[in-house]
Image 1 (cartoon, rainbow, N blue to C red):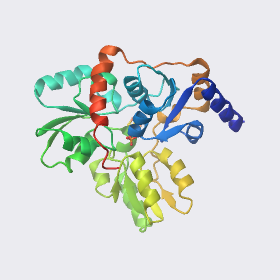
Image 2 (cartoon, helix red, strand yellow; image 1 turned 90 degrees about the vertical axis):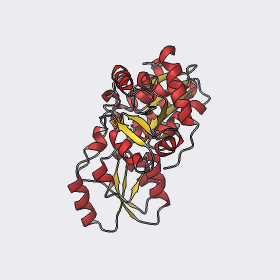
Image 3 (cartoon, rainbow, N blue to C red; image 1 turned 180 degrees about the horizontal axis):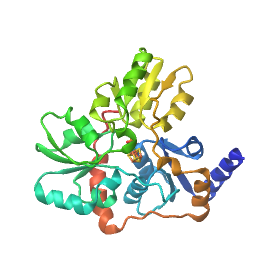
Image 4 (cartoon, rainbow, N blue to C red; image 1 turned 180 degrees about the vertical axis):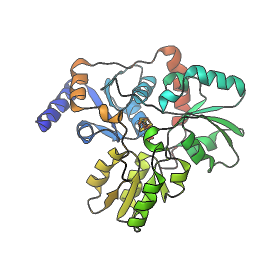
Length: 306
Ligand code: 13P
Ligand code: SF4
């Protein structure tokens, strides 16, 4: 039944001239029907690059917005309109405008996990895959980095000549990793390498052997000679990790790391999105153009930290 549904989706995507883009954190069924599975940066690049006139996004709202910002001529459909991002909701344009008024002249660097209206008030964006390179590319000492304070504290270490002003946002899925559980697992499996996403808290990153974006983690595990890995990011990555590395063991802390919003994109949602070409996510021009400037400045900086 499920395979029939997947075949139907693939056939419909072709008929509709649609590309299906999926974030790694979505459910395995979503990976299976996608043309491209990637991290936030990879998905933005693929949205811009793909020739199809319709993009079906399996991810969360800010990702579909970014695709709309980059490709105004394309129809961008978010498979499940309920899929939002609590971290993106921790910053609003009016609050950023107020903070900017308090820190005149300080450039604003905004993580792509944010609303388009916030990007529109920012000088440049970053993802977890290019944050260090983006920080280093900016002139001046002070930078206001929004909304993820954990990512900001992580990249601060690579840019000692900069002073990053923080925003009090975080990803609930990565922020709640429990240090005691990680330490216990490390003790039980002393041969395991611990890999973590920079959205985790500094105390978690302090006990990790490798820190990288979602695609950076996947690449690291594939290239490593080691056989056991403790994975400290959303558990959607386990599907490609296990499929591509059958000889390796991937362990997770006792409390699962699940982003409930990413998991909302079901096969039924994809089928409905293709049948109805809705719900469309379209960023209005007055927000799109300044947001595009910030995203394009980011895309001109090569990624450097995985
Ligand atoms: P990356 O895809 O950039 O690794 O970000 C992780 C994330 O939380 C996406 O919502
Ligand atoms: Fe937002 Fe975190 Fe979910 Fe990514 S994993 S969509 S940052 S809540």
